[in-house]
Length: 499
Image (cartoon, rainbow, N blue to C red; front, side):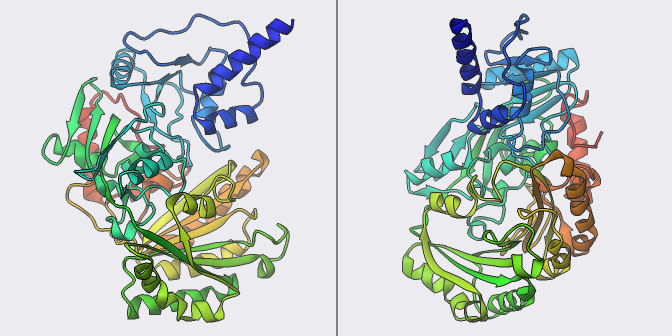
């Protein structure tokens, strides 16, 4: 009997070892997913060397739940999951799915709030194990596979004195992040969104061909890759990214106000941006629950406005100079608490602001929606009263100013906007799902009047019209035409709720 238990434990550890750390953690939280039992014969797909999991396999639910990093596991069940290890695995899986009429979804990191890679029926191709990174210091570029996580690229690029506008969360996979736009660290100096730093890609299309996409080779695919996100009609197996010099100094100045003083924060920030050149500074305002105040405390005692200005510069002197307008403003003189000129590296930014231990990054149930706007302050004001009645203490609103997003002819990312405003619900119990989803839904008519567009990586899938609204009419129509051209049989899933 002891030998049987030991063997079972070893099998469990081997299963967990095949997943990402977050996927394994989720599996351990899920009931009955690690139970050992009789093993039916495994499905074999010619040419696929990676793991293949069918719905009838005993470890299927473990793998299915691991495909989404947070606890809001959609009740959608693919027929088969293929964990690809290389281009050949992807090509073989796509050909098999097309032959068997299995509609394909793709997962790179599983960080999408909708769990968009989980669909009913068909095949899920998981490329999270494809995470190799090659840095070309001379060309200031990186060649990364789609499963590369943000922190991995931070460290590899840093070793060569380089950087990239990586996600604000260290565990996000770069495939979905960059292809859906990508709002990352130091965006004001790096083109506004990370998708515009994609300079080439390898993609497997519905016919099983591996194609190169660059501005001159398959330029229509290149255009679609830069912004289509979860509705892209292919499997990207490699991204070539433009890198940038590593900032020699990163400083942050933070100012905390009661939520009732949001207007002071907004008007002061507007004045600073009008009177000073702070276009190189990343500006983030968060409406949140005070972390040291009980969850049931009244809003006037618990809700705060947390503003931070981040300077990424070539010297500490330049960084301090960039932050000086904030230190000399009403932000510094009227706040409850201030923390100025705090030094960081990228890992330190993750640990302080967006770690998995932080309320905004912890493994819980999630829903989010957003607007891209040129009226960030007014959008926050419009949402403030609704935020006061947030259903949990971890719900928050995040606004990133100085986005400097501009539409580009070689990118389907459509919005031109100064500010991203995201509205986040975070909770623990499934019984509270309806309450939190309704809270998000009620925010949409409050913020949409200020919208220039939406960020496709963070729209609420229960409102499928939101995906269409992420693109201009011209770009949406072109995306659909390219889908018909490259995927005439509909091998790949569309955006959630779209056909």
